[in-house]
Length: 87
Image (cartoon, rainbow, N blue to C red; front, top):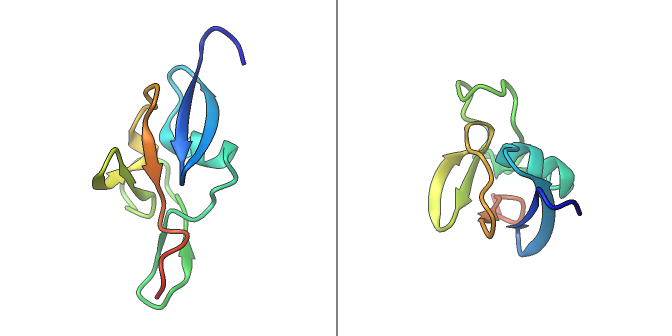
């Protein structure tokens, strides 16, 4: 971890990320490749990388439906994915 790194929490796990990276990059680093579940229970993840598809929606610091691809990480940020949600 360099002096420019910070820690965010993805589904309760601490993840070291470089300053300025997006939340979706933190999810990849954490191997948390499911941001939400479809109505049929299928795992979904970021698709377009620019906020149009809405597939990267996660809960950040208690606020639901935040776009992971459009949100920069902040030290101490708490990110919850839909990986454990039932259909």
